[in-house]
Length: 226
Image (cartoon, rainbow, N blue to C red; front, side, top):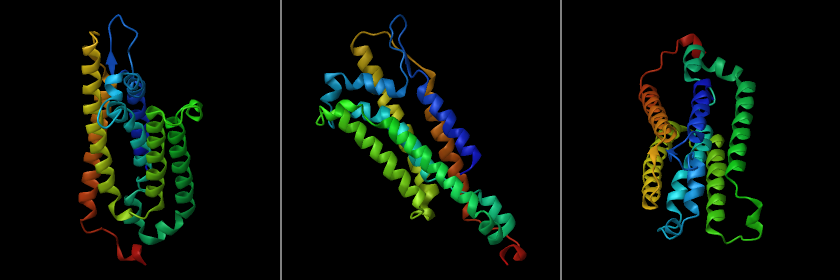
């Protein structure tokens, strides 16, 4: 997994925690996850079809981080082009370490998405069940990426993850702002959601460029393939 992607996901996580909406004079300056939690308390959101759609969209980006990590390449392609298969075999130990790092990060995100222990008392609560669903998306989606079974499509899948992230932010944030205005709350747009959508877009563009380059002839020397 590249350092660039690690830094990108770290910055994206910060954007997820930064204010998405700002209510002047009201203590409702919320980041993405908190905004989803606030929306889950409203009857209008619980009555959506499907139920709690707005909360799901606002919480989804955190689960998508786990998928981005799972489907990220383990090693930079440039190393393969410069050194051929000999370099690939020499990076076996590093690849294992990176895979362990990916698993740890995915497990941490999965744990962050889990509902509180109150789910044991009210297992049928739709809000708690949604949190379980999101944690399972993060866990199983991330592990499928790590397994390498879809390696040929990793970049295309990564682009799709980013597109879903942008749509989730735009739709979820719009719905949340409309809900606040419906309660007569003065609300302005925070920087967190906008920056996160831009970063999802940036990563999709970068992955698209890499996918395009992957179809070009590889400049590996004959000695590198030996």
